[in-house]
Each structure stands twice: as C-alpha cells, then as structure tokens.
Image 1 (cartoon, one colour):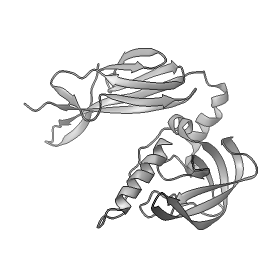
Image 2: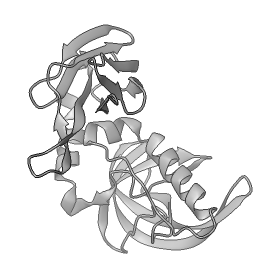
Image 3: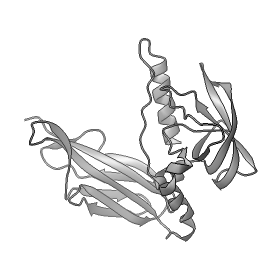
Image 4: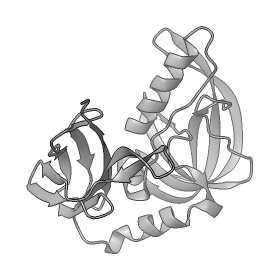
Length: 239
C-alpha cells in the first residue's frame, strides 16, 4: 500500500545514508482514505510481541511482531488472533504498541505478512472515534467514491512572512471512469462525490503567471464508499 511504501522508502534511504539521523516522513490520511488503502483493518488488544529480523533484498532490519486478540475484524482478517509487524520505533516509522492496550489497526500486506506504522491511521481506541464512525457507517453509506482536495499558494502575509493561502475558482478536472469538472471554493477546496470506484487523474488548470510545485496531475485510486485527497501548491512565475 502507498503509505507503507512511503514509510519503507524514506526509512531505507535515510538509514543507508552515512551521517544522517533516523527520520520518518508521513502523509496523513483521513479515515475513508486509510480504510480504502489498507489490506486489513481491525480492533484488537495486544497480547504480546517479539523481535524478528526482516530482509528486503540486501537490506536487513529488526522489527517487532505484535500479536493481537481480534475484538472487531473489519477487513482482511479472521479468527481469534492476528499478528502484525512494525518497525522498532525511534524514528523508523515503527508504532509503539503497549501490551494489554486496545487499538484500531490499519495494516498493509507485504510478502504474505501484515505490517503497520505511524504512517497509517493506526491508533489507540481512545483516539479512534472518527475512524470507527466512518467504518461502522459503511453498511448504510451511499454507493460511490469521493475525491476532494485543495489548492493553495505561498504568499507574503501582512507581517512580512509567508504562509499558505487558499486559491478560489481554480478549475479542477477529474478523469477516469467518468469525467467531472469543478472549481475550488473560497477556501481553495473542492469535493466530488458519487464517483464509480477505480483509478482517476486529478488535474488543475494553472492560472497565468503561476506554476505548479510538482505535477499538474495526480493519479489516485478510490474504492466504493472510499475517498482520495489531493493537494496542489502553486507558485508565482519568476518576473
């Protein structure tokens, strides 16, 4: 899954670079996005954990295998228990599970094993109200996927500094199994609902005297009753 790939890639590049400290960079997901991307989603209580060695090509690392009792299996798991691996923590994206504590876990399948990290929306059950509300509402939710996002630019503020400011009335085109066009609102946001599940390309029409920081089109894939969130940053052209 995308968030697991990002976490593994960032950690691997940093870990193999001499003189660099460990770091973990994540892209935050909203519940409907995290659920659609995950291979397994469940509520479970930590029974125990052990340290294991994982090999990926020529790279070898220590990870923690955490065993859960299954309290509420939502996707991709069955039975009474499940094991999920995570990195050791301390900057490598590992999630710090606590024995006997209950969690909502989002896991990704990799080489036959389930893995999670702080780059997923895995969290203690006390912080999972928003996620559980979405997951438990799926059975009665209207069919269709949602793609939303925002467009911002970096402008000088009244204090002389710079900050992200929303851009209104920017044309957004969503192309895939169907095509939709929409303009951003006064908050620079857009949202299209009721899309067929599948892959899409989200593009924006770049205003004159501006350029996009990155690609003007972003590829996303959405599941039924799931979502994708994209962001675009515009910069002024050099005068």
